[in-house]
Image (cartoon, rainbow, N blue to C red; front, side, top):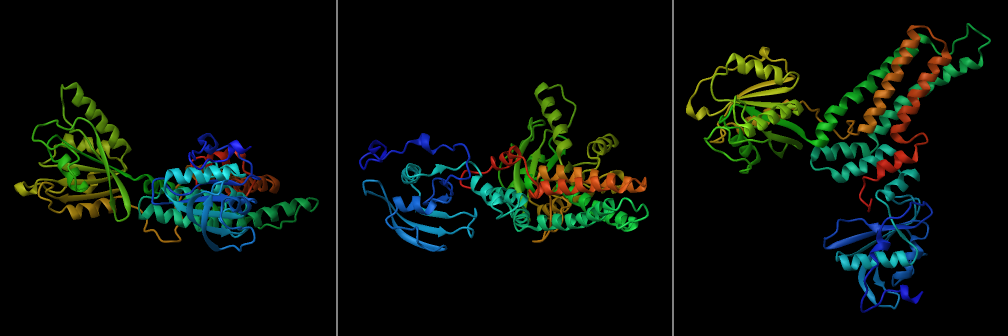
Length: 478
């Protein structure tokens, strides 16, 4: 057993021990909870033996110390050699992130130090945590529901004000509260219908007023539908809103992209057909990420490579939420017809570029286009004229809600799928009442809606496979 002790002269951790192992909730787990390479590193330990194990490698016995206390000391190798001077934070169950006894070791960020501290913890009884295992334990120990646990990953991945705000709203439980209200209403109706079944001998007895039941079911269905519809905007906030910059060759698409990005990202030339592929980059406008796609100029060409770029232009337009169509002369009826077909049900911004050359183009009527949002602007990308107005128009074209701390926006595909199934179930309830079906059949559909909504928060027994799939995308330290 002495061979397993780290040696003072060559203290190299056995990296194979630092790999995650099979999950067991009885284990005490450890992992680095901060990104590697920083000046400091925080190693998190959670489990019933966390205080005892850390005490074995720390210069002070922590087993009798109170929660929410901070302790200075040394991490020691088994032969007494100091590995690092550290600060140790103690959190007692159940008042910790995981709901278990937890210890956080703040040490210097050297990978050598961190690996050796982790190796010592493992040698004295810990195992390496699996991805998301700390948050998974927090869920299993009732510290948060499943939707809040998923919000932790979204919060870590947030890149702008909007993604941060939606993640914080979900983490605070705003989505969970919304679902809890729906479930309480459904549960009341289900209970009354099931109570009728207990008195089935009395055929004329109704505990649940059918008119009230119908009104409430319609109200619940409208709210479920509203939440489901927010998924489109939630995805736009989370992934960035795709904006395609289109137009004929040499109208200034690449110049505009460079101006918006404030960087020479795209090649600018007077030669037609310079852009032969889509070029993508992002900017942040008022806390929202927009993904701009500079496309190849649309024209007839015999150049095979350029034609591939034009084909990709059409593909980019099909995926875009907003289309910026740049013109520098009066568009033909053919041009307008093509944009009408390509931009149906999108937001369209038509830009008259190169106004410094004093060309005159009359604004096109919004009635020509079946689009969600329409704007016409005059700019000079080359001379930076009215670019600030364009940025404002782009933000408005996104048609996003003004977010507050209590707004509920669905960003998870799993939640969206559950809401769609809940909507189908409530529709069956409404159809059943219209057909005057028996209370037991209506109650079954109501119960199914309850179960589906519970899937989102983990209020019913969730398959282990589903939990594993959710938490495997977390970083190891969470």
